[in-house]
Structure formats: structure tokens, C-alpha cells
Length: 107
Image 1 (cartoon, helix red, strand yellow):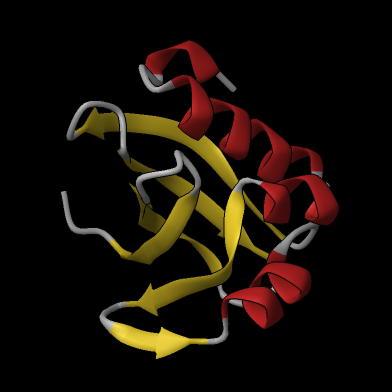
Image 2 (cartoon, rainbow, N blue to C red):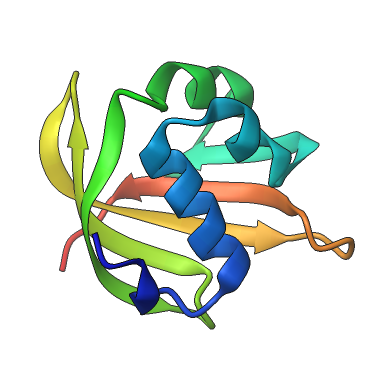
């Protein structure tokens, strides 16, 4: 996996942590009340994180946009198979992620 395509160092570190399956470290990048939207629908962020990490991962990073906050790539899920996805990270004023938008991407 080529992580150097990601220009935002916090996003890169979070994605590397996701890829390693480290739920505790992943959650440390986010506020305690972080919001998750999955294809525009609200989901429980902590539940999603603890269930998906270790069972879902990026296969490749294909595009990076929005000053490195939006990541697009090929993704593998043990449950749903392979597909293209996006992860869009949003910071709060303290520099922690307070929102993550994920979903299937078409590109």
C-alpha cells in the first residue's frame, strides 16, 4: 500500500492505523462524540470502528482530494467483498477528527 499519496499527515496516520487493525489507536484520532455517515446515513461510529477494523481494509489508494482529507480507493470487506470507497475526514478546532463520511464511490 502506498501511503505517501496522502498529503495530510493525520489522515495518513489514521489510515495506516486502520490498515494495521488497531482499533484503540484509530479511535484516538477522533473526538469522543465523533459522527459517522455511511452513504449519507448516520451510524454509530464506535460500533462501526470496532466491528470493521481488522475485517475491512483499503487495497489501494487511488485518489486524494480536499487538501488530503478525502481518500478514495479500492476496498475489501470480509462481509461485502471488494468495491471502491471513500473516507472523508473532518477536523474540529482542536485538530481531532469529529466526523467521518464513508461510502461507495463511483469513479
